[in-house]
Image (cartoon, rainbow, N blue to C red; front, side, top):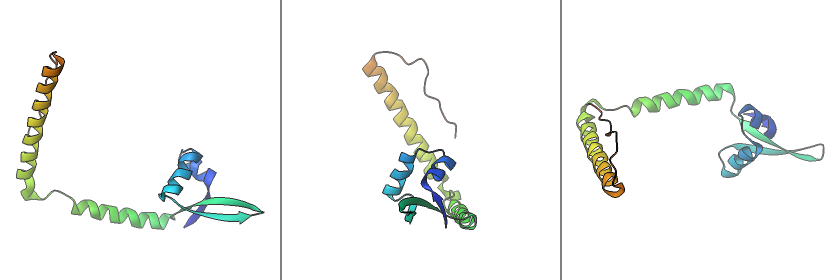
Length: 111
């Protein structure tokens, strides 16, 4: 792991110091406090390039696992029909409540 001063990390990631400190407090970023020349300096611990490439490879494996199963197209079609009914119901509710016609009908997704 590489240590980067708080300010430098904020500049590199185009964040404010406040945002970086909050991420550290929430546990989203690893940090380390070191005493240098009588002052406490806080560093953000950043994974090295080799660690990043390893984690990127594991993310692609997860994407392959979560790919849709060929036999699940029926489930997807049922979901689409249910969502279309919900959109039509919401559209009718808006027309009823507002008393005005919506000029554009909801778009239909062809399946």
